[in-house]
Length: 80
Image (cartoon, rainbow, N blue to C red):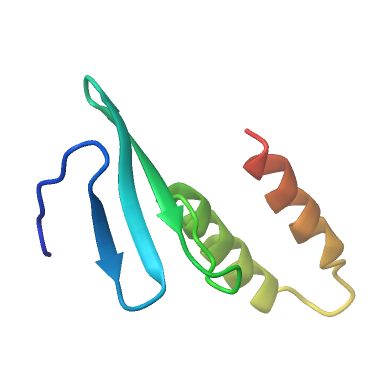
């Protein structure tokens, strides 16, 4: 793991098209801004893990299952 120190307003560049900027630091909380192409999916880790879990369940679900329910489930949980 690469560990970097950045101050508010400073950035990290990943390849040619992803830039992460420190927006604000308040105590133990850090706000980051992520500038990436719309084709690059960026998720909070807990959301990404939930999507992976749901995809695994969906891939092992018997025929006749409504995949729209997974989309609804993910949408409902992203609102939280």
